Length: 235
Image 1 (cartoon, rainbow, N blue to C red):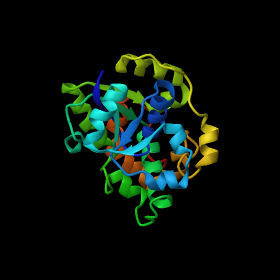
Image 2 (cartoon, one colour; image 1 turned 90 degrees about the vertical axis):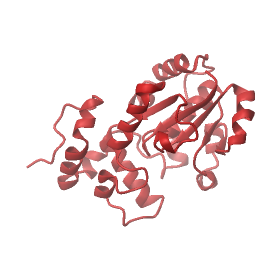
Image 3 (cartoon, rainbow, N blue to C red; image 1 turned 120 degrees about the horizontal axis):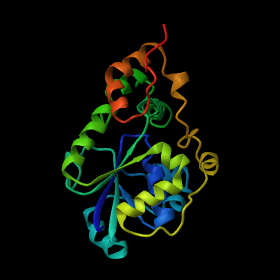
């Protein structure tokens, strides 16, 4: 595989973890659709974890293609808002309940936007829209273009298996099978790397918020095989 490869995901679904795997297990530099200078300033270790952090520029395509034969490009946008909608994609999918809770906390704690509620995020009244819309639009993209799905949970708990699947997709051999341990990431940047689990929604998404999530996203959850449990507030 050569050229542009999207690393797409709904926010707070594991895109940074995927970039770490590509950097530490494949030696691949990645770029981002977003300026990450503030994050690097807050935690300089990001540079060593990711190998490099550059903001997208079309001039990088030829440069990095010459260096490594592929340009992995982080995005949270919908395909139609990317530089080349036809490019192959690695899409990271995460339990929507945890993704919404984590994205809400990101607004509250890192973006300093306390006026954004969890219900706002569940409805998609925030940047990048709703979790279901995001997953579905990239699924439709995959019907006509090459999209490889990677589960956040597998990256966290079965990293060796994930490395193998990425090696097959990228058609290149890994140089390592493990990345920086989560405890080390959390210690260095606890505001960004929280627990890394998929259980915090159980405490933070309750009552009306949980009922709203089930109404809007229950079908998508079942489509992706995330949970057979009923996603509604207990009565």
